[in-house]
Length: 273
Length: 273
Image (cartoon, rainbow over all chains, first blue to last red; front, side, top):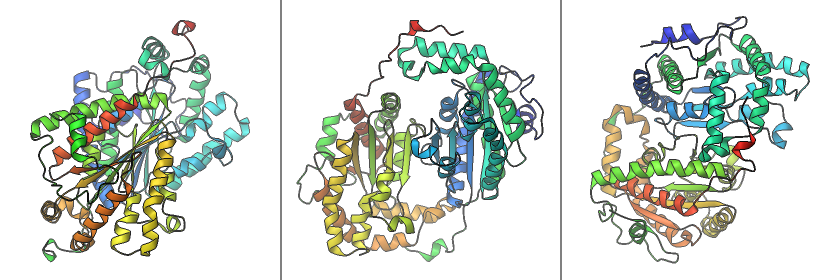
């Protein structure tokens, strides 16, 4: 069994780390070596997250923002299901960031992101995020290099702003191996019910694997801060990924310790006619 | 066991009905008389809804909008949990309509509603809705009578617009008795973890029970249309309410019959390096 400290010893990227992906194995089985235990742990944590979100909502002073970032097939949707379905759509709002619209492109890249920040009392999940603006945008050269280079500090400043205004940030990079991605892409080709998830351009991104790896590395180096650190999750096993993330989310909410507000009335003040 | 036709015979308000609440019993146990069967039915339907939403999203041409309307404690939140948690926050977005903000009041009353309409591929749930603009607004006289009176047809036109543009509407009135509301309000007073849900102004609304009843009656008379009919759900038992709504949602999605899109490529076109 893994407790909170064990997990963070393994996955937290300390601010200022150099080449933090180096030596990290997406199949690392140190945490949650056993599938059954992992699944039981996830189920328990998911229930606890639900109960904690109820208090968060009742309190309505703070929010939790969970950023899920990873390459195609890394398991972002599966994480939402595994960790947040128990909590349900009442307490969790998911925003998926795809190719920006014309109107979004007419603003700065954080404009649409800020608009999607979770309101007080909610858990917001970003399925992909503004980090794409230093990942795909960098790798595919969709913006000049110096523009991208300035974004790391802009993002740090934006996250600091959120953190200072009651939004606790959890950032997870879902780390899978190139072999695991091949299997998952192949599954999308083999299963007709998954064809719609396959996009031929995914293979172009796969061919740029080394460039993405480099871009992720830089992102982790420059945007893991004390107020919003990155965690790199070994994600080749879906059940391990869910167990790790659920455990961190639960512990974070426990540390936030949301409390039911004290009413300014006594139950005995009222008789219900 | 109740099938789709049985259910609608009981709960669908035919367009043009007069005094449709008359004789309706919030405790009516004709549908789903047995709790165990009801809960099994809900669980099965919730799973089916999840699978159907996956296709709806893959297809990305239409949306489902579920409007939950009912007085305080009628079980709107509980319905979301019971019917939509299996589907989770990835496929379902919930919008709760409370007191409008300054900016919302600076626009017409449907402005914020239209902005919250579900995008293609999603299930949207409205927890309360624009119907408050002919309910609390009417009962509490927050707008002139003639302004409220014009809204019924405006709402019908708005819903027709949505329906003609790919949004299927399901409107449920959660119908509870005055006795049942007393019990649920008392529970909020008795259980410290529920104190935050109790609002002393709920008792003011309760004192206006007959006026609300009348306003709901008029809403059902004037806004149950062929393109967006109302259904009145006997909701004194939470498990029966969930079973009825889950069954209608499932059947509606089955009738919509969303299909996985056919890709314009063959799996054999690709080899994953």
